[in-house]
Length: 359
Image (cartoon, rainbow, N blue to C red; front, side, top):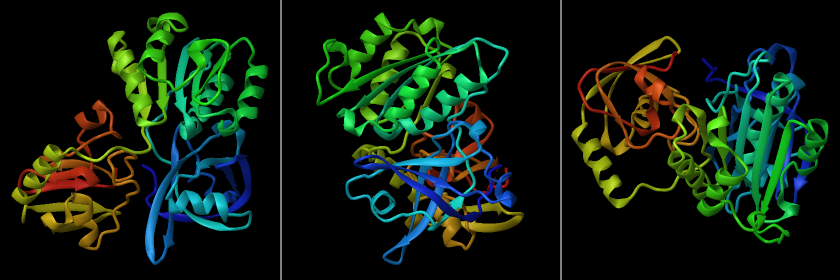
């Protein structure tokens, strides 16, 4: 279980990667090294106040655990207060409040096996995939990795030089294909965004899906949907497809109405919530919309970050009763079967729901 506490980490270096993206490396004191040990593909949750309001954001680690450093990549998002501040103002020596690494966009690497990996990345979606790619190549000396990476233009490609260096280092085991929307290559396939047609062509010409042990997908929603749909059409089983979403779209009008009706029906239902060994009885109030916000309103500092059903920072285990989730992009089928829920998306369905964050 990852710690839900925040720790202050000092920035060691802020490096400009593209005109609108930086990497941030942190100093890691000896007493925090164990707490901040991470798996390839995991992310960090950051907390900071902007205009008197607390804001939390997740950013993926972009290095391999074997490198012995802690580094993230942050792309500036239009209107994004946190990402703009990191890109425009953050400097070496500054301190940030950071939660220990967590996330399930991970794979169990084994140096004794030979595997085939394929990744589809778009924009800043390269950050967790770079961590996975470097780890796979370093830990599994007989495995191969193929990266399909989409961007608007070459100046906007995050970690371009580092990826080129990896390709030179692992020349027989790493293949990289860039797709640019605003630049033209001689081969038509590599022009434009990674849409459904391109992904289908890739899976018919450059990749044999049946031979791939794991597909990693991270980037803009439409790209991820195109890849996932194409893989499903090819008969690729879900356990071989790992997806990391940074954001999600809003609920449809029908979904929002159904969710609201469920919240109203749950009014007054009593829940038993355990956090850090402390148990509290909480009555569900529809005005707070979710179990998470009801728990926090009751005074328990339940962990959260995205509140969009993506990052799984708010994950808890239901030990009694039944709950429903509006959406789920952060839990695997196995986690759901084991009783885990995203409390930011959860509404109790029965009286006497019991759940714990201490798992």
